[in-house]
Length: 387
Ligand SMILES: [Mg+2]
Image 1 (cartoon, rainbow, N blue to C red):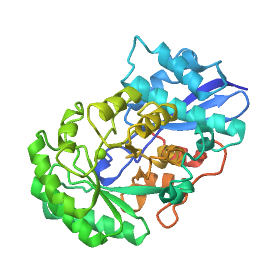
Image 2 (cartoon, helix red, strand yellow; image 1 turned 30 degrees about the horizontal axis):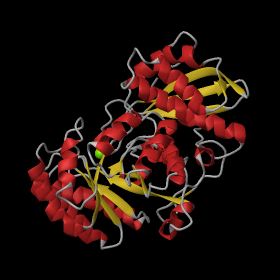
Image 3 (cartoon, protein in one colour; image 1 turned 90 degrees about the vertical axis):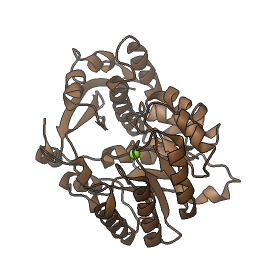
Image 4 (tube, rainbow, N blue to C red; image 1 turned 30 degrees about the vertical axis):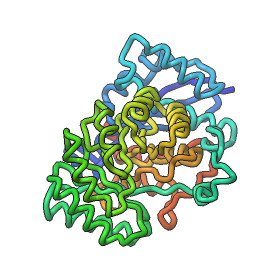
């Protein structure tokens, strides 16, 4: 057994004034958990202000240091429960659960190295039934879908920029794409989807994300009616984030699967999406949702209700590598989200992707190295360090 000895944080980014719409990496807190056996675990903390992470993850006097330093790692779930129970009177479903999620990924990383196994094996191994012949192709590889954004929203400039990025990535061998007609008119949403499907042809997978663009069900139902002919794999977040009820109403009016959950935390919020929202594609981030421990529980809930879990990740391949481990375990994860560095203006994103799992013909082979298996070189941290 190993004992947790130290928690360390650092902040990396593409520099001040970076534009995330151009794919830049904003100041991103990362953390390392160190043990007395010399094994360390790595993770990143997406969308929590780095100062909050630095103030709460550190020595024994910090919020999380007090809870974890000195603990023995017998199983990541035990420490998850220990920390979660200790947060009952504090911030819980705010930044606390996201930081717990990041720590959990680092603990799984250590646990895998301790036992000499890739994390997906320890989550339960490949959960695919012997009768599910269609799933055979998912027993060794994970398929990333590329999220496409533009610097401008609506109209010709958006169409041109997003379709060009899709064309470039298709050329590189990627097979699945999610366009993002945000802050656009209903006509522009349909037009971008039409142009993209025309460019792709019938085979590649196409998703559409409108980023909380509408409030009313009838407007979105009309858009979905036009999208039906374009073979859209899922339609993401048409309504504001807090209520899953409009999703349930819309699900009765369209055959296009609806997706949500990028901000979702804990299995309880995902249960609400499943039960009240009738959502068929859930999109937890492997850190934000509460870690791999919680993501596995979300997969298990989805299986009992016939839903899919396609992990979200508009962050780096430090997080993306954790998504691959969940997808290898999960029988309901045909795709994971991927912010392909090839089409964005971000030196850091590119370098982090180069150190991640290789993508061959648009697919990622299940990792075989113990733990999560992401190595972050010290010189890279030095060059992009922002805190
Ligand atoms: Mg989204």
